[in-house]
Length: 419
Image (cartoon, rainbow, N blue to C red; front, side, top):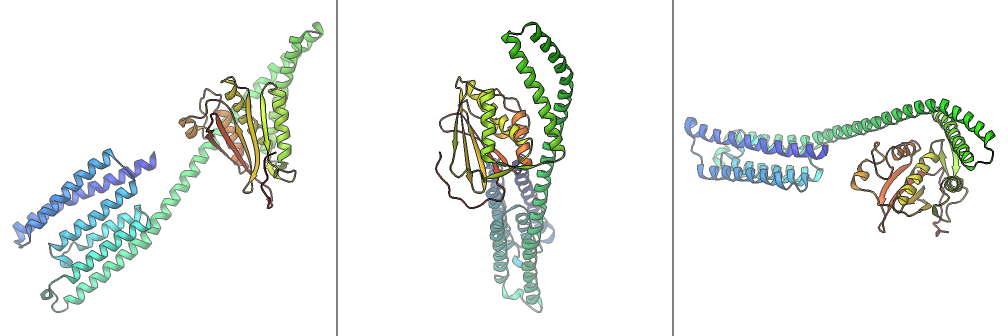
């Protein structure tokens, strides 16, 4: 949206400049007629200005109701401005007109805003018009040293147009590239600040949970002594142990991330850990694993303590999305493609909405499927390892999440069929 708003502002600025130019043209005609008493072909000039006014009004209405391609819109306006200015100069002195250098203005605007081939067309048209104006001048004007003067002005125009087309255009592109880089850096910085804020909140919550969990552990142990064969107490003990283990793992993971500890992990070992997690926590969910033949023990990726939790977050969300439609199944495909390992997770839920595509993974958002903070943290963890997370919808229904991770020292391989 900001980029589109900038384009709209630029188009409106060009329309405003043309409006000011029309007012100045009308004022100059009256000035030349009343004060300077010059005999100019008034009808062609007034007719051209009337056409320019109609064009400006029509293009203003067009820009408000139908934008189309913004660059094409701006290109057409600048090209028409060159033509209008050329005809006005032709009927008001040609190359001897003091305002002939105004042909450089559309070139300057195109150099800053348009692509190279658009700029080339506009500059070529301006140069062609100036050349026609010069060579169509009557011979009686070329007296004395004036011929050399006008030819020098023509050469000066060529030089000025060339400098604008090459130097100014390159400087404008460099500035634009720098602004885009700065904007991306700011977005990344904002994302990292959100991750840090969530990390601090998680650390605080984990710290606050330690004491209550220790108390619950003591109470659970006492209940187990009094009710040794009670299945409810046994289940409660398992869940308390699970919470304690999660807090312990969180502390270990935080320390590893702080010390930037990384290791190598084979894809098959990663799949085994995913299977263990799903079998332990979702025994009633049917998970269809599809591992291609080119995924061998030698295929390894960089890993840290946040990688597996990041992938498991995505799998948990997929299982929850399928469960909301009473379908206890998901699909997990693993393949090696173009020096990357890809894990594709498909659920059988409602799929992603347009808002999900714009926000999920970029910032914490609310979702009926339980997506949001977990997906944001997973995306941040994968990006830290050089990976990517992309979202799409399956053509038969449900959502697809593709996790791509770069391989360590990838070697050539033949893509096999799924096993």
